[in-house]
Image (cartoon, rainbow, N blue to C red; front, side, top):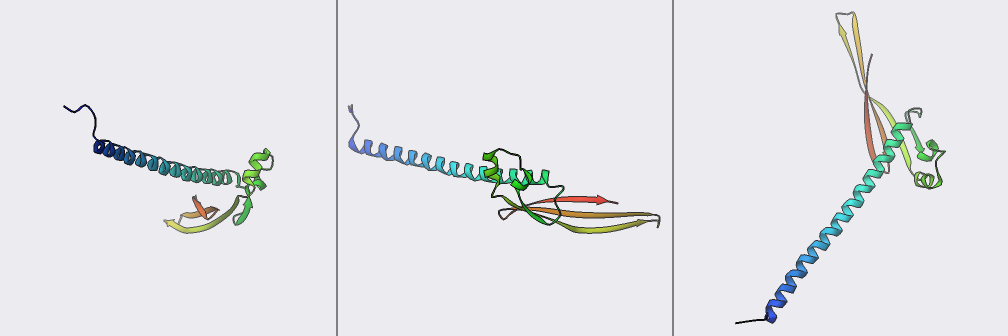
Length: 130
C-alpha cells in the first residue's frame, strides 16, 4: 500500500491550485475596477443633482461652475467643486393646444432641461398645462 503522494500527483494538485487562485485574483481585480467606475458615476450624478437643486435662479442656457453656487463651503469641498463645469440648457420640446366646444382651451408645453457635466447629460422634463 502507498503511504505518500507521487511526484505527478503533487504537480497536478499545485497546478490546479494555481489556476483556481489566479481566477480568484483576477475576479477580485475586475470587481475592484467595476466598483471604482460605479463610484465615479455616482459622484458625477451627485454633482449633477447638486446643480439641479440649486440652479432654479440660473438662466435657461448658461454655463457655470459649482463653486459659483456653493461659495460658503469648506476648502476641501471648494477644491473638489472648482473644476466642475456644468452647462444648463432648457428647450421647448413640444407645444399642443386643445379646444373643447370652443369655450375651453388647454395648452400643454413640454420643456426639456439638460445638465451636462464632462460630456455626460442628465435630462429633466417639465410639463406645463395652461
